[in-house]
Amino acid sequence: MSCVSRRRWLGQVALIGTFAFAFGCAQPTAPPAAPQARVIGEAEEYVIGVPDLLELTVWQHPDLSGPLLVRRDGKVSVPLLGDTQAEGHTPSELAERIRAGLSDFVAKPHVDVAVMEMNSQVASVIGGGVLRSGTIPLERNMRVIDAIASMGGLTPFAKKSKIRILRNTPEGQVEYPFDYNAFIKGLAPESNIFLEPGDTVIVPE
Image (cartoon, rainbow, N blue to C red):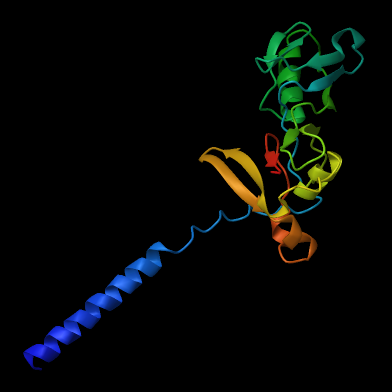
C-alpha cells in the first residue's frame, strides 16, 4: 500500500470511528423496566402500617378485645402488654405476638387481629392535568388508570403522554412513564402498572 493510499485508509477509519462515537452518544436513555407483574388473586398478605385501624379479638375475653390504632411510632397499646410493635407485621404475625404475650396472663388465649381501616395503603395523584389532586386509598389491584379515574379523570389540557409514576424503592426513587394516548389505543398495556403504597402519579398540564 502506497503512503497516499495508507493515509487515505487511516482517514476513513478515523471518520467512521467519529460517526460511531457520535451515534452512540445520541442514543436515548432507556426508561426503567416496568415492575414485575402481579397475578390477580395472589396478592401478598397485608402489611400493617401507620395509621391503620385494627380490631383485636381475644376470644372469651371482651375486656382484652377492642380497636387498636397504629400510632406514628408504629406501635399499638394492647391491654396487659402495653406498647407493642405493629408496623411492618402482617395481622397474623401481630396476633401471634399478642398471643405469646398474653399467655403469661391468660390460659391458651385465642387471638385474632383484623384490619378495619387500611389508612396506610394510599397513593397520591397530583398535577394540573387531573381534575382533583390528593391521596386515594389503594383498593386491591388498583392500576394507574383507576387512580386517575377516582380523582375525576383528566382535564382537557392534560399532557396525556407525559404522565409518570414515582415510586420509592430500597435502591432509590424510580420513575415509570405512562402514555395515556398510547394505552387507550392498546399500544402500551404494560404501562398501566399496579400501584403500591406511597406511589405518586403526576399528571402535568
